[in-house]
Image 1 (tube, rainbow, N blue to C red):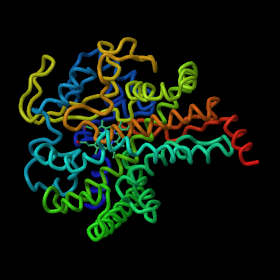
Image 2 (image 1 turned 90 degrees about the horizontal axis):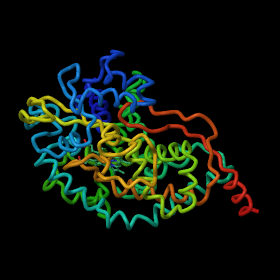
Image 3 (image 1 turned 60 degrees about the vertical axis):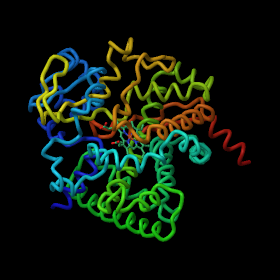
Image 4 (image 1 turned 135 degrees about the vertical axis):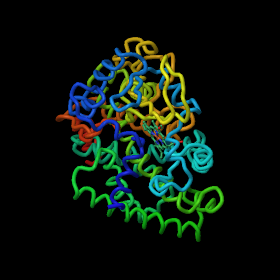
Amino acid sequence: MVEIRRTVRFAAGLYRRRLDFAFHGYVRRDPMSRLHLRAGRDDPYAIYEELRAQGPLVPTRIGNWVTTSHPVCNTVLRDRRFGVRSAELTVPDSPSDEFDMSFLDRDPPDHTRLRRLAQPAFSPKQVAGYRPRIERQVDDLLDRAAVTGEFDLVPAFAAPLPIAVITDLLGIPDADADRFARVGTLIGSALDGIHSLAHAARLQAANDTLRALFEGLFELRRRTPSDDVISRIVAAEGDQIQPREMLPMCNLLLVAGFETTVNLVGNAVNALLAHPRQWADLCADPAGMAPATVEETLRYDPPVQRTARCALEDVSLAGHTVHRDQFVVALLGAANRDPEVYPDPDRFDIHRTPAADHLAFSSGIHYCIGQSLARLEATVALQKLAERMPDLQRNGPLRRRVSSIVRGPIHLPVLSRTASRRSAARAS
Ligand code: HEM
C-alpha cells in the first residue's frame, strides 16, 4: 500500500502540488470542483471567467485561495514568502521526503542545489545544438505518417518526438530506449489520475521497472561516463546530490519530457485546424511563423493549467491576508487570458505581439527548466508539418486527456492527401 501511495504521489505530484486534495469535492456549484467534470475539462476557460468575475484572489471552499489574475499569479510565483511546500513538509527528514525529492517539489536551498545540476543540459545554447537531431526525428515521423496520409497526430507524431529527444538527452542507450519509453509513458498516465486498482498495480510495476532501469544506467555511467545528463548526475553523487535524490530527479526529467511537449503540439494543431486562416498564414511562411504560433498556443491553451504555492508566513495579497500554510492556486491558463493584459484574450491569433510574457512555463525560481527544449521541439514540429502537409484536416473527433491540470488531446485523427501522393511518388 505504501508503495502504491508512493507511485501515486510521485506521478501526480509532478504538476499537481500537494494541495490538490483541495479539489476533490464534487459540488456542481463550486467552480473549482467543476473543473474536474467533463464540461470543465473540455472548456475550463468559461469556469475561469466565473472565478475572474469574483475578483483577482478568491477564497476556496476548503480555506485556500485561487487566482485568475496575471499579475497576482506572477507575484505569487516570484515572491520568496511563498514556497512549494508547507512549513510542516519542510521539516528535515519528514516522512514526505521519502516520497518526493525532485526539485519541482523542493524549496531553496535544496531546490537551488539540485536545479543547478540539471540546468546546463537545458541551457538555450545547449538546446540549440539538439536542433539537427530534432529535425531528423520530425522528418522520420512525418515520412511514416505520409505513407497513407491518414494518421492519429498524438501517438504517431506529437508523443514520440519528445520521448525520443529526452531519452537521448538523458543518455539512455538505444537498446534500452523502448523499455524506458514504455514505463515512462505508463507512469506519465498517472498525471491523469489512477483509474482502478489494476491501473495502480500497473503503475507500481512500472515504477519498480523504472527504478531498476535507472539504477542500471547509474552503474553504467559510473563505469563509463559520457556527455549526458545521467553522467553529470552520477559524477556529482554524494557531493551536489545525495544518492536518494538521484532517482527522483531522473524520473522528473523523464516524465516532464514525455508528458508536456506532446500536449503543446497537440493543442497547437487543434487550435490551427479550428482557425483555418491562421493555419494558412503558418503554411504561407512556416519558418517565419512557427515560433509565434508556439508562443500563442502556450498563451491560449497551455499544457499545464495550474500550479500552487504555500505561504511560508502571513502575506498581504490583492487586498487579502493569505495566512501562513494557506495555498494559493495559480490558474496559469486563466492568467494567460487576463483581459487586463491581453486584449481580446479568447481569440487565437498567431500575429499577436503580447505586452507581457505568458505564464505557461510558470515564473520565478521554478520557471520550467525544459522551456527552450519544448519551444524548439514544437517549433520544428509545426514548421515541418506546415511545409509537408499544408492540406492537413481533421479526420475524426478529438479525445482529451482526463485531467484538469495537464491539458491536451490523446487522439487527434488527421488526414493529408498531398502528403500521401508525394510519398507514393517518391516510392515509385
Ligand atoms: C510545453 C511543454 C512544457 C510545459 C508547458 C511545461 C510547464 C512547466 C511548468 C508550468 C513548470 C513549473 C511548475 C511550477 O511552477 O510549480 C515546469 C517546471 C519544470 N519543467 Fe516543464 N514544461 C514543459 C516542458 C518541459 C520539458 C521538455 C522538460 C524537460 C525535461 C521540463 C522539465 C521541467 C522541470 C525539471 C521543472 C521543474 C523546475 C523547477 O522546479 O525548478 N518541462 N514546467
